[in-house]
Length: 370
Image (cartoon, rainbow, N blue to C red; front, side):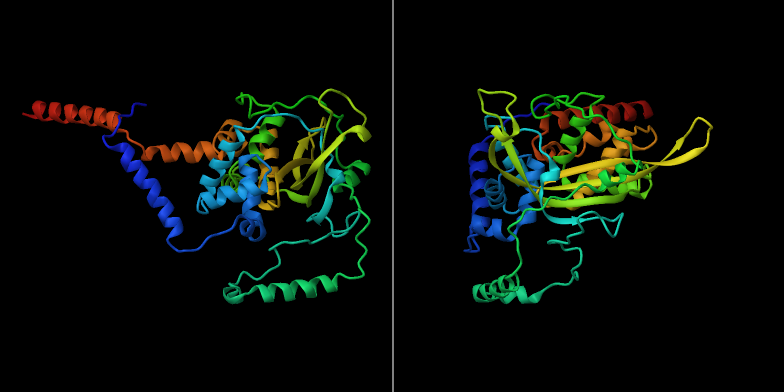
């Protein structure tokens, strides 16, 4: 695609950048990074997920720099990510060892270990809270003091791990048990995805996909484009520990691994009913599992991801939500917004070429009519 330079373009661009900064500062208010971290945690989580970089402070900085624009913040953080060295690969994370702060199931009322509602907007009234207009630090401190007082006497020193709901069903023989696959996953950030893709590639692209796009395609499947209607076996939100090997020692024992921190994730396992024809040609109902996982508390995206995971595991030419090329090539935040936004850039040469062609056709048509 050909572009031409614009005379005086450098001055105009510099003036545009100055105007952008002026628009951010003209209200004489400064949003602190810590304020974004403390009050906009779900926004920070979403930016980290789409940028594929777990760095809350940098995500908050990107949000501030982008003036609250999600697509720009993701672009900034992913661009920064591309400059970072890859020093280690962590050991495989065991989600069963998650320090759970939220855990719910839509499949069973009583699940092993119990359900924990945790922090969620699911049960709130969607009404504007005008008390937030006049809130003060004194109000904050008073509420927090009362809340912490209510927690006194609760023994929270013992860490409790919770079994997976699907393991409970596997023990009953209701779900298939698969052998452990230790194949090294492909890294889509270092190698371009190739079709047909394997599941490791699909899951990576889905988890870093644009939240709105992943949600929209998951919703499309629910509405009828594939008619995948799962039941949520389990949604869990919590912190999982990250360990790495010593750089000069391989295959260390688990107790010798180095703990480098923890990250908050949302994990979803969906149970999808699938009719299967047996040898006697009778149809029986079996369940397949759709899987979703995302940085931070990002439940809607993780659920939609689990729907699309199952869709792409069962290719079906009739429905776009089952087409891996259609889904995976259109949900990437930076790719999609970048390509749409590039239409604002100069296309003078190509457009003039089209105009010239149209003029030639019009001129030829008038000549023939005469």
